[in-house]
Length: 204
Image (cartoon, rainbow, N blue to C red; front, top):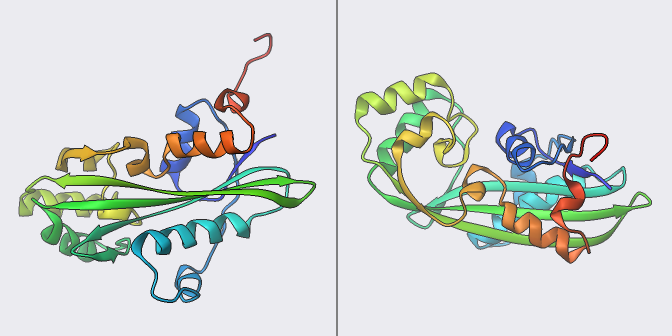
């Protein structure tokens, strides 16, 4: 039994690898706007969870536990898309610096046996982010690196963006992109322990 990561996110892959799991990576290529259009007035958690499930469902094939995830920042009651340019990143940071927001991460785990889904586990995790009151110069410099592009909240906690996060309340791994506690609970629901998926060298 293997874990299949339905994501191209280097951060999600890094989380699993650091936790002793070498997943099979299958990029879902889900059309997120089209998937979101299937919903009728969803809550922020429902929106993010639906995208996570769509990504997991898109790569159903070989047997294993498929993990799909999606993260978005909720500020002023609105979900924020991921920035893809310097200008978008700068605008986002000018809005969120010195403020508090919530990062919502949806998780969808599918147990696939014999090429079909036999069980599902879904859970969202929410973490409160306290953004630093970053200067205009630091915001511009950070945006110029390109690191925040495609990242929920326009930052990466584990890299340069960590300079500008004063505090978080919740699960750090969820902020990076995949909550290990949520994944642990999902695997347990399928009858597995996390150590069942740890990498082991020959003779151990």
